[in-house]
Length: 549
Image 1: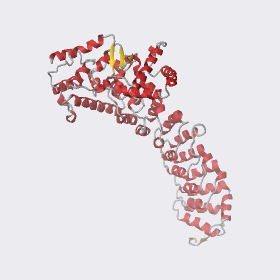
Image 2: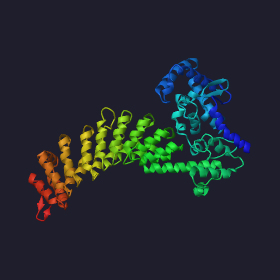
Image 3: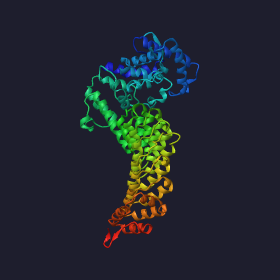
Image 4: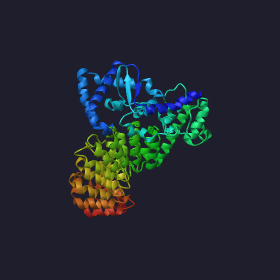
């Protein structure tokens, strides 16, 4: 056992001093042969280009691959399909899961990948998933990241990961001996291979090794960990460390601490889950935390409604969050009707969010009616939201041509900014709005600013407005604003509308009586309404000695 431990301790030195390491992936198939041949051609073509400063995402790679694909497809119509299947087969090979290959890959100065009778340099292998649009699982991607290539020096591997990070990244590797998971990764780490680190010792039990690793990476005794996660095996230790990392990352996301979360992600290879990202978009005050998570872990998230809805409800930093989301992943985002309605309900920055959404996707989305309904109920910035939507109406958005009466009525019911929202609807969407009798009756009943609504409506659409019996009766019952509404209507219209209306009623006495009775019951300003009405048409009402007859 001591000899075995000594040999394990020397393996990292052997691989790091080798000029070139051969990676044997197993026998070939038709599909893997085609993939390997594609890589060989890419390798040959790349010699003619100075690609040392090209990043993995550089468009020049895609252009080079596109030219090659045209040639490939001339030989076989399903060449791309076979290439994709070949890559899937290779990534599923046991080689990618074995813990002991990790030192070979990570410490090699250069490598040759061999599969069947085909072989290629390892330096360009990491490009293939990008070209074929296949997303490797996190473990396989981590193996690709540490392969000898021009980009290894810019990947997470260049940060000299410690044992804790490696256990989190490669803890799912296969090993017949559980202790090998620690000892193999120990040889690659920046800390555990030192003299005061962990020494490979197969005489030590797995439980004692776990205790030693906890002391080394967590700087505490095993008993210092939460009881429910306290591990007794190496596999459980890895689960425990990941749970601790997730808990710490979640706490930082809730605190919206950009500097701390960046330091944490630089040191840790924790796989940030959807729940953490959801928390971040909901709590981020500026968008900085979300930007850091995308920069370090973009491939680990799905940008669907589970992300967009909490982001839309973030009343402090939503505008910054959406700006970052579109900047990093514009093509991956589809804004649902539900998300747009949630944005319209954001009382502090709904208008700012819409500015961002329309700037990036204004030509791709249609604004549903529910957005206007949410905007008119928005007590803080509903009017600004309507103005933003209308600004994009003609050139970028197919805004609904029919603004329902419900939207106008709901706006009038908004006690904080109702009149402002109502005016915004008329100013911005006046060409599409028909003022119905129902809307006018609700305006006449509005005790907060009914007269202001009528003044505004007649200013913008006076020639279209028709005053009905129901409107006058509703105004007669308005205890706070009824007299002002009557005074305005009769003065502005110079009795024309009233005369026309009354000419259609042969029973003038009954009609005047209805208004007079309603006004008489009006405890707020009924007397002033009657006086206003009589001053314009003294012949309308019939009074008895005791009042209205």
